[in-house]
Length: 116
Image 1 (cartoon, rainbow, N blue to C red):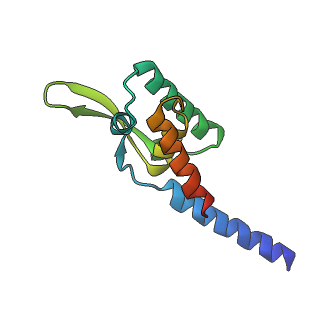
Image 2: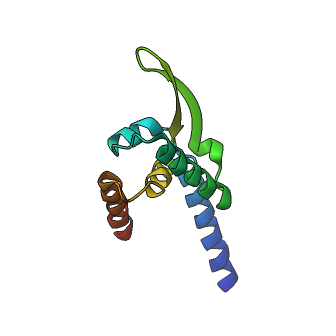
């Protein structure tokens, strides 16, 4: 009976992971940074890099969560990232919490995740 329970747990966990990782790329990373009032290119690059590292270490598909895109802003072509909700979260938690907007966003995620 215990074996059946373990198999059920694994199946549920796999289904949850599959739904979680098959997220849509609904967000632009540049818009996340604008909403957090981050303009420093090095700080932006560092938060992306740490989010990329988290995916790598956890064996989360990079391609399902990050896609390099190019957008026209009216005058220039700019490089950007289209990201999933998971990537959105990873970017925010890897930003510098000394920025008040970042700290508020991180606190928001902490409170929302603690309710589950």
